[in-house]
Length: 261
Ligand SMILES: [Fe+2]
Ligand SMILES: [Fe+2]
Image 1 (cartoon, protein in one colour):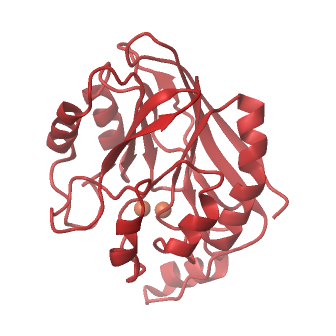
Image 2 (image 1 turned 45 degrees about the horizontal axis):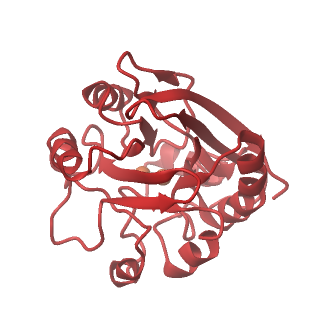
C-alpha cells in the first residue's frame, strides 16, 4: 500500500496546484490515501472550513501546526471535521483532535498523529515525546499503518522523534520549514523518515511569500505584510509504502513537481 503525503499547502495557488496534481500523483505512485499539511491553506495563514471542503475530494486527512488558529473562525469550524488534526502536545482547552484512525477500502485502517516541535518554535507546546507515547497507547496494535506529522523547525528534533518512534510507527514526516530535505530513509526498526516534506507553494518565493516583502522584513527588521505568491506553484511531498509486516514501512521517496498554476 502507498500513502501520498503533501507538505504545507500555501494559499490559493497551493490549493489549486494540489487539486491539479494530486490525481496525477495518486495514479503515478499508486497511492490509496492522501495526508496533507493544511496549516497555511487559507490565504497562507491557518485553515478555513471552505478551504477544507474544497480540498476534501483529493485529501483524506489534513494535519496542521503552529498556524492552526490563525483564522479565528476555525476555532469553532474545526469541530465539524473528523479528518482535520491539530497538534497534540498543546493545552487540552484547544478544540479539535490530534490523532484519528481512518478506514480506507484499499488499505484498511490508518492512524494519523499530529505533533508540534519545541526547538526554535513559539512557546506553548509541551513535550512531544511524552505526548507521542500517550497517543500510541490509545492506538490499537492491529493498525499497521501509523503516520506522524511532526511539525517542527529543527532537523535535530525531527530526527530525534523519528528514532524515538522507530519500530512503533510507519512514518515520521517533518513539516513546517516548507523546504524539502534530501534525507528520506527507513530507520533500523522500520520507520520511514524525512526531516521535511516541503510545500505546495511558489517555486520563486521565500517559503511561499513574495521575495521583495521578505527581503524588506529581513533588511529593515520591521513588521511587513508578506503576500503569498499564487503562481508558479511546485508541489512537494513523499510517498510512503508499507505492507503487512507490523507497522514497518517498505519504502519512502520524495517528489517535487511544478504545476500549471
Ligand atoms: Fe508551521
Ligand atoms: Fe507552514
